[in-house]
Amino acid sequence: MGQVTETSTKTSPNDIVRFLLELFAFISLGIWGFATWPLPWPGVLVGILTPAFAVLVWALFRSPKAVFRLDPFGKAVIEICVFGSAALAWWDLGLPLVGVVFALVATVSGVISGRAELR
Image 1: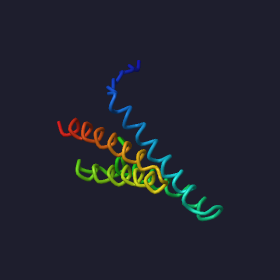
Image 2 (image 1 turned 45 degrees about the horizontal axis):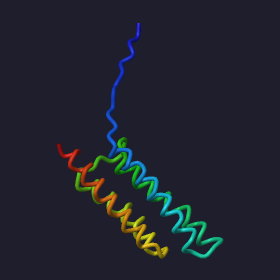
Image 3 (image 1 turned 90 degrees about the vertical axis):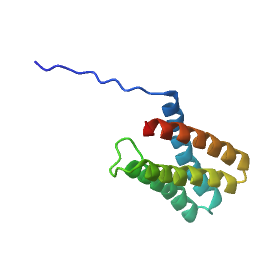
Image 4 (image 1 turned 60 degrees about the vertical axis):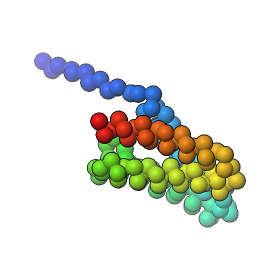
């Protein structure tokens, strides 16, 4: 009757690192919103809407099933904006070492991913 075809997708170690970087960026933006702005209202609003906006932008332009397809340059711009915002958020929170390490790991992972995508 119906045959089930098995599609294999290769998940590289860099894909796992990139997924963890995305989660860390979204969580970082939420922490920044809650910690930087005075509570209750500006802090709660910024703490929820900042990561929600980053997730929306990522889902629309950068995710594997993105609504809008971009060329590699456009994808890199989205990544730089989201990951750069997260790194700057840590810098603003008074933890520049976390921001610098995150930015370096995100940059190396982005270069590896970008080179693989251009092949």
